[in-house]
Image (cartoon, rainbow, N blue to C red):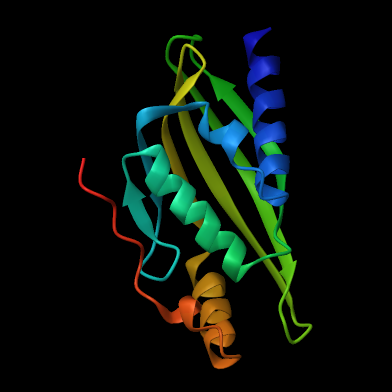
Length: 153
């Protein structure tokens, strides 16, 4: 039963991210969440607070305002007190010049008693970096910025 609930929560979270409604999702994160997005680009980073993750979500939506995340496959393992949820997902948007953006990735969540304690995102970085470079050439300076820096705990 808890596996079905976890899958529903993941689907709901992806929908909330797609509509830039981050607060309900952030409330599910531990105050000292370990959040990572792989790579070395404007969206890469490692964060340890909800506020830092909020900043990251905001940057994502400034760069990709029409972002649509779709969870394609969700796998749940472990008991409710130490659950791991792995999701294969796709992301899409239409860039300012009309060019489509499509990518795919994997999310690994660790959940303890309903609280997300770890969230690791891995996206195809070659596609993402090429798209960020394209956005920068279109005049979106933030696409070429360094990764956000976590605030001191």
